[in-house]
Length: 194
Image 1 (spheres, one colour):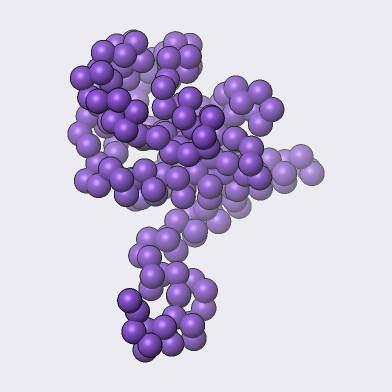
Image 2 (cartoon, rainbow, N blue to C red):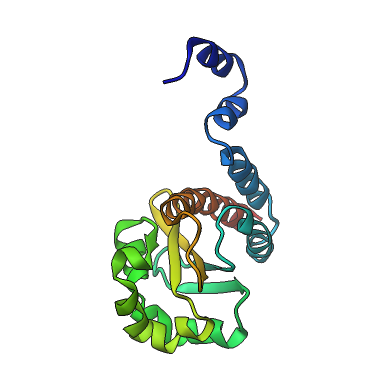
């Protein structure tokens, strides 16, 4: 329970100071999303996202897929620490086999593969055998990039070792999904008005 002195400090500062005092890292995520929202194109947004998101989620493989807001089919995808072959294989084979993507689409929430199924079941899935196993992705988190209730993309994180705190990583991925979704919507809106 916060002390009266702490509550006084929180209420007397700016909103960002208050947020920062309560949850370290939140201000950095907000500033990251604001930076992404100032991108001049979606390609620039993707590039800057991949360069900066590693500070928030401790899995080395990262991806961002931009989806058509109506069909929810990918219009572009970019990844870091994966091969071009993996990116193509992910789209041609993986999307139809992905159990976490089903959670992201249906429930609009982040999903961790080991929440969906135990590890031995994961490595036996066609998705792991045909796609994720190419880079030893034993741990995968996917999160929806949402704006105004629409699924605009997916944030993807993976690695061969688990994150230090999987539950926290899922929560951060969920928050980032909302923030990045807003940034995508902002850039798309600006593109449409140009």
